[in-house]
Image (cartoon, rainbow, N blue to C red; front, side, top):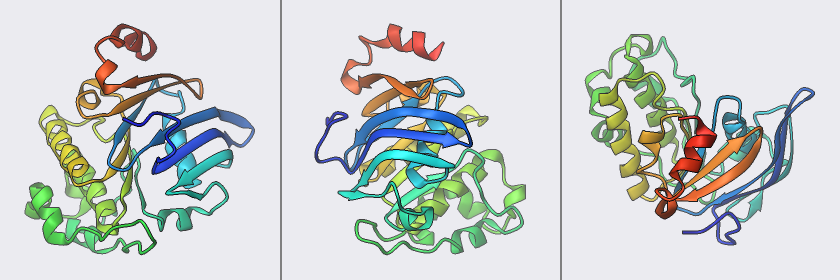
Length: 243
């Protein structure tokens, strides 16, 4: 597997600093991910994991360093242009339209048409991947369960054609059976060639599906664990995560 210095990375983040107002949140983040990989950003609350995702998209007050996507520097680009390069963001708060039906939510996202982005999934493909949404297609977003809302949030970014998926705490507060379903969906997406960065508190969910784990603490990456080294580094990992 490629490491954090991989020259052939789809996304390479180098010396990334991020700020909210006067607060310095990220202190020189470095990591990379190759096409088709799934990596996690692990750490306690406040470690900087969500800020890292938002910084990739330019959703912070100020950032510096380097973010290279498919060989193109994007650190100075506005968010809407970055999204059109094929990045899909599923925020922790999900961001669906509560008053619209599930299917209306799926009809809204535009397809990104920049180089490197793929064709967005059709409605039929979405329903094959998320049968629950097919059953609830006429239900308003506010009447969907938490798990169904999460599926809808993921489905919306798949409709755009984004190939790099930034997924923030997608299992939080969900029943185990829904978490299991999402695990199968993500494994399926990885098998289709999607590249995924997963912020996750549920380590038992993340561990078996990731190629590599980055552990953040106080806005810095303090540990990198490849999938094949997971067992040998589990005790140290538990110390950082407090589990």
